[in-house]
Length: 399
Image 1: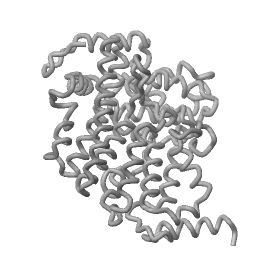
Image 2: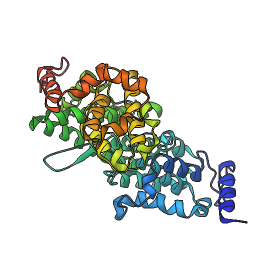
Image 3: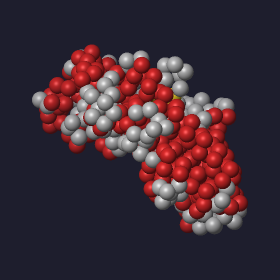
């Protein structure tokens, strides 16, 4: 029997069996299949492109280990399966096709029949994951100029898992550990509050606008899981619910203002990027991960100038950008990415000759191209002026 065939049989065994050799009863996706999904959306995780050394990047190394040692997956328990799911989602949350384990790590695994044996270790993993280094696996980031603190949509994923841990601990009468998790959740909320206050103090309009959808996503995830666990009457959950929508005397009004700014300027830009799932070439490097819209000029420059992409692949990306714009024509990020990409192409004809004639003709006479052709200074000035003129009716804040 060949090694390849033995691996195939292992895949089949783990995909079909509900109970692993360890005795762990699987209630979600088989871990080997999960690794396949990770490799499909983020092959760069296994190519040696990323730095995986250090405790805060251990989750990346965990995936690499199991990819090389598939037989070990048959011996994992609930805690290790939870850890693998966390690692998979952290590694792909910034990609075009994140792994679909959200409900498992937010709720499902916390309600497993064996949870009492594992809940403390799972809670400790959750606390530790707050400080995992995700900077290589997302391009949707914002920084606090005062302390270099970083925030991305990963904090929303973390919020959703942490509040799930808190709810599970409360329901299992583990109040002390629940309080510990609650404190870290509070610390994260404060971190995001301080980042937005600092950006406003810095008068950093563009980065404030870039951070606003991140905050909206993060607190939205927190709210959804509180509802999912039916914990609205819990005092702690009540104290942090709707922080991006309703003014809270314990938090600065900047959070509600940020939510309103996102709705006014950014909400149509930052969606699931379905069109960008088509060109699989864009998944081959972490350098190509999509940023926060509409500020996609630097990303477009990276794509256009990259030697990792050939002219056919770049044409495929351009077609996907145009398709995405047509789906959401009030979102301008794709046009900005296209414009910067075209300007940075070594030889533009090499790419354009690989585009279907009708698509190329449609682009050249479209509003999409007009948005793309505006200078970066002019484009950003429009947003800076808009933010300066905007006054939040609920908080009274003006940038």
